[in-house]
Length: 129
Image (cartoon, rainbow, N blue to C red; front, side):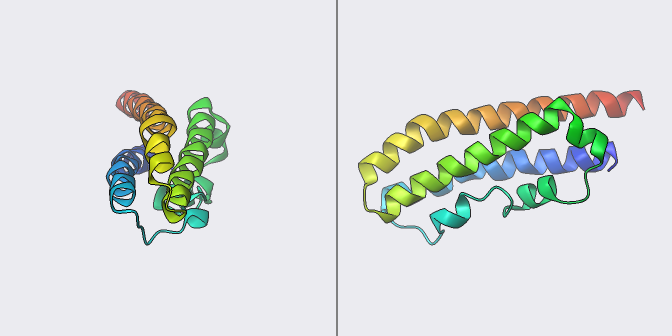
């Protein structure tokens, strides 16, 4: 996969995963969500996750540290988002809010930092090419 394509995917992922905070906040506030926790927990079902796990990424990129770190953090992000929704579905808004404001916020920020770093590295590499 070309650097520009990688860069576009990473940029889109930053926005998409940033939007989850609003979605989860709404679910916690209203006590309902149409999303199923078991599906949200899966890191291969969102657009970015399907790309991360899909065939379009070359072996060299997959072997690199940025990819490996983002892959792990992305999975942890989805596990935590699913856990928040699970508490919403169990009508435990207090626990859902604690997860959202604590662990989820931490995992989300860590993922966004890793994606931003990867994006910077990709930009630097594409400028050298």
